[in-house]
Length: 523
Ligand SMILES: Nc1ncnc2c1ncn2[C@@H]1O[C@H](COP(=O)(O)OP(=O)(O)O)[C@@H](O)[C@H]1O
Ligand SMILES: [Mg+2]
Image (tube, rainbow, N blue to C red; front, side, top):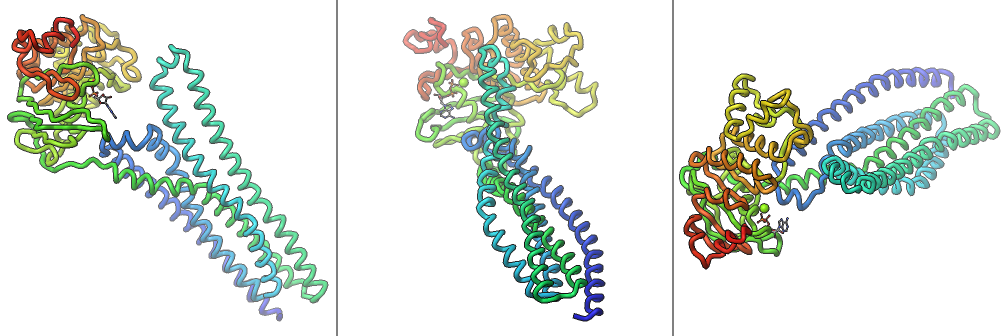
C-alpha cells in the first residue's frame, strides 16, 4: 500500500466524519419531529375513539386501566422503540461505511473481525427474545396498576372505612414489585449486551493486529488507521446492539398500540345521521327486547313517552328499569324491536345529537372537581355574568339556593373530588340544577331520590313539580309520594310491562300488582 492511498483514505475519513455530524443531527431533528406528531396523532385517535365508543362494548372489552396506560406510558415506549429502530438503521449505514474502508485497507483482517462479530451476535439472540417477552408483561402490569390506582382513589373512603385499604395498597405494591423487577431484568440484559461487546472487540482486534504485525509484517501507519476504523465500527456495533435491544424492550408497545387502534375502531358506536333535537310527539317502544349475550333482560316491551308528560317506571330492583332508560338515551341498542323518536327510528338518528337534549340524574354521584358554579354550568364559556344569572335561576328551580347561599364561598365553593364536600342530598340537587341548566327537552330521574332523606327528597319533589308539563320526564322512584305526580305509569316485572295506566286507575284496581305494591310500600 502506498503513502498517497493512505493520505487519500485519511482525507475521505475526515469528510465522512463531517458528513456524519450533519447527518446525525438532522436525523435527530427528524426523529423528534416524527415523535411529536405521532404522539399527537395517535393519542387524539385514541381519545376520540374512546369518546365515540359504544358504551357497552367499551366496558365489555376493556379494563379501566387500558386506555389510561396507553396514553400515560405505552405510547411513549412505542415512540422510543420507533426512534431506536431509526438508530438501528443509521448504525447499519455507518458500519457498512467503516467496514468498506477497512476492506480497502485489509480485507483479510476485516472479514475475520466481521465473522467473529456475527458469532457473538447470534449468541446474544436468546437475550433478545427474553427482552421481548418481559416487555409485553410490563405493559400488562402497568395496565393493571393504572386501573388499580383509579379504584384506590375512587373508593378510598370505602376501603378506609372497612380497613381494606392496606390490602388494596398491598395489591398495588405487588404489581409495582413485579413490573419493576421485569424492568430491572430488561435493564440488566441491556447492560450486559451493551458492555460485553466492547471488551470482546478489544481482545479480538488486538489478536488480529498481533497476527498481522507478527506474521505478515504490515506497516504501522496502516495498523493505526485500521485501529481507528475498527474502534469506530465496534462502537457502532455496540450502539446497534443497544438500540436493537431498546427497540425490543419497547416491542410490547409495538404490539399493543396497533392492537389498541384496531380495538378502538371496532368499539365505535354505530348510529344514523338524522339530527333531531326536539321531541314533537313521543318516544315509542315497539316490541323492544334486550339481552346481554344470552340473558334476556327485556322482552317485547311496548311503551310511550309523550312530550311534556311525566312517565314513571315502577318495579322491583333488577327488573330492567335502568335498561329501559339506557335504551331511551341510545346508550344501549335493542336486540329486537324498534324505538322511534317521533317518526324516526333510533338507528337513523344521530344519537349523540339527541343526547345533548337529554338530562340525566341518577343515584350515582356525578360531581366534577370544581366549584358549584362550574358543576352546574359545566365550565360554560359564556360571559361570567350570564352564566351566573342562569346558574342562580336553575338553582332556584332545583331548590339548592338556600344551602349554597349559606356556604362561605357560595357558588364558588369547591365541591371536591366527586362532590365530597357536599352532602348526598346537596350533590343531588346540584346535579339537577346542572341538567336544568342545559335546557334539555327530556329529563330522566333514575332513582335520583332513592338514597336521600325525606327532606332532600321533598326538595326534589318540588323541583319536579316546578318543571312538570314543560319537559318530558322519565321517572324511576320508589316512594309513592313521588310517583303520584306521574301522568302515566308502567309497572315492570321480569322484563315485561305487567300493568300500565294512570296512578289513580292502577291504584284503585284492587287486583293489580301495583295496588299490592302500594299498600306494602314495596315500589
Ligand atoms: N352488563 C350486564 N351484563 C349482564 N347483565 C346485566 C348487565 N347489566 C345489568 N344486567 C342485568 O340486567 C337486569 C336489569 O338491570 P337494570 O335495568 O339495571 O334493573 P333496574 O334498574 O330495574 O334495577 C338485572 O338483572 C341485571 O343483573
Ligand atoms: Mg336501576
